[in-house]
Length: 418
Ligand SMILES: *[C@@H]1O[C@H](CO)[C@@H](O)[C@H](O)[C@H]1NC(C)=O
Ligand SMILES: *[C@@H]1O[C@H](CO)[C@@H](O)[C@H](O)[C@H]1NC(C)=O
Ligand SMILES: *[C@@H]1O[C@H](CO)[C@@H](O)[C@H](O)[C@H]1NC(C)=O
Image (cartoon, rainbow, N blue to C red; front, side):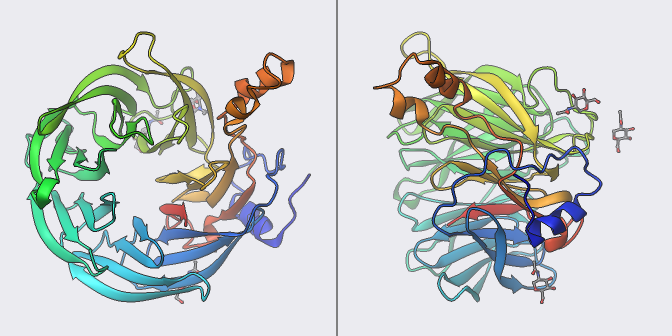
């Protein structure tokens, strides 16, 4: 079935330079209940409606000279935004039904913050400043941002003189126990473990990541939905590698032992330009079977999202391992961030520079193996479904070109269903 909506035609026009994008809708999802996405583009925070078929921008909070490249949402109506271009973190009140975004606070903090992470009950917010090399700890108990503490990331720099000229904390990740935040520092090839107990927010461990020059960017604890992690899966931006660590909780800290390193591109799919390539985002599915990674600036016509499957440990207490499954086009260039829909049947990706700025990709057979195990085990259909589970469908379910946003090089940098 060919997609003919006005919006997609606009997207097609925007993507005219990208003939490799297959726009036939091979497997459209049954439209679910309408939902909303938060989208960050240079100068603007947007609310975007998604009805299962098309995207529609319904609110636009614009302030020239700002860059809300990461957003965090506290139910029912508080939206926190970084401003990568200024020394503030922002609070908006979001009207879900009225489609409004009201700016209510510009809180002075570090310049160049690129990521925000809540604690478990969303009373604390951790901002990582790529620009200033610092970590801001906010008290947001009553919603308002109050700066509790700033931590300087000051480990020795990595060897990449162009990109590791200073500490660059890129993300903090809350561990499933809710006690520790791990900060990935791209500039120092280091994971900083921060203990949040009793609001101390002290650095209790510094893990130097090999190989040198790796450039830790984003990571995820594994498994999801547990009380404690057994693994941490790290994406290194500069060397474009995925690194698996086994983690152990010790008295007041977490220890990391590397167990696997693999290419973010997958086997036999080298980037056209290894020098410019910079890995972007990493996500673990909530069923703990799949890991997805984005590759940016590959020099190929479009960039990619790579899917790895998680192999359970072969011995009790042993390490998981990842296997490359498939790689598909991100539908444009520079997929800085992507996220899974609430039901995890879709992957929403951004493309910052060209092509589809916002794209919904179907994720096959989410949980199908588990649901079907009782009745049709061993049937050919069942085996095919198991084989397909977690794979991404390259024809998009819906897409909007970068021209619907800020145009080339000013497309979305963040997209998340709320
Ligand atoms: C990217 O380009 C390289 C070199 O031309 C090629 O080998 C590789 O298969 C391409 N990757 C994808 C995902 O098409
Ligand atoms: C990779 O990109 C760099 C920077 O744009 C350029 O100088 C170099 O020639 C490119 N290499 C290839 C193989 O295209
Ligand atoms: C948001 O509003 C600003 C100011 O009116 C406008 O320049 C920009 O194009 C709008 N962005 C989108 C995506 O609608």
